[in-house]
Image (cartoon, rainbow, N blue to C red; front, side):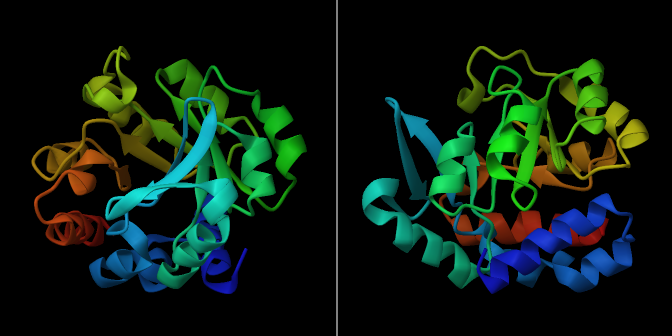
Length: 225
């Protein structure tokens, strides 16, 4: 990891070891730092037709084979982490900061063996049982959702706010993010249910003013912390 993104990764992992909310806010929980840290950029990695592509909310998709260095530098410029979906081998090969896997992807122990101790690993959870398993696993953070229906997870039944409430009561040992169909309109209800972190795609990517959308969500996050 480059220095700026290493610091961001350390902040996330510090939450695993019990740092309090005040330390989190000082480390980067206010709205301005969230925007500068890459929330606006909307950087994402995903697979398309068997080939990994990377892109941003402000530009075309970029082939990692061709533009890996520019994507890496883009993250570093904004102090943002580069997390690759699904592919542990690709995350390691392209110098990403971590990998996020789903319930049907490579087992977590195998992912950890592939990427080693330094990369961040996230796991999606869709039920109390999966959340408990994630807490007991080698994963560094958990995704909880999809809270609401979303085309990014077509066919997946929304878990609603009940799983968010369950996570709030039982998942203090690791950072977790509510995800799925969340936007500025319904995010306050997700926060009221107990989420202190949310993950969004369309709420920023598809907004008429992505900067304003990111800032609105950042203000909500800052208020929580």
